[in-house]
Image (cartoon, rainbow, N blue to C red; front, side, top):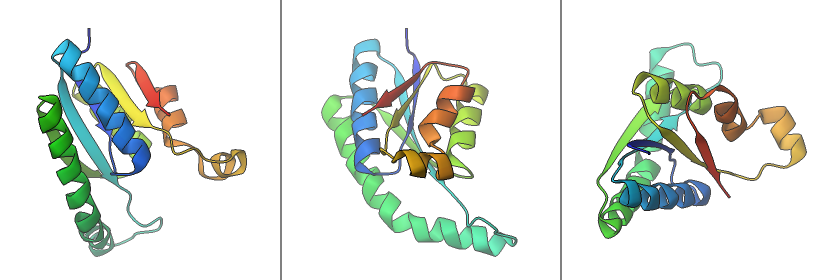
Amino acid sequence: MFRRVLVGYDGSPAARKALLAALDLASRYRADVVALAVVRPPEFAELQGEVDAAVAQSRGPLAEAFRWARNQARRAGVPVTLRTEVGHPAEVLVRVAREEAFDLIVLGRRGLTPVQRWMLGSVSERVLRYAHCPVMVVH
């Protein structure tokens, strides 16, 4: 049923739960798992240097998050590919899922308050709205 699973992964507790759910599914369906961290550039970045600085700043926290993900995948006996891209998380996840023919997107839910969700939007809501494939939101 699921052959290619894309996980939105930033190392947060919600993303870790999502990765564990994806690894469980992958072990059952013998699916490939790709954990994708999307680095969001500064809101009004005009120069490539500003974007590069945002990516460089994320490397330390993502290295630890990726180490944790590799260990969990090893324990589950599931190979995982870890990737980083730059952009808006929802847009990048939907684009990558479509372009690379993923069968499922797995996301964690941060649990925004109604006001935060209204003001900031929710990555999971946007992915649910625009994805071409099923989306699992892990609470």
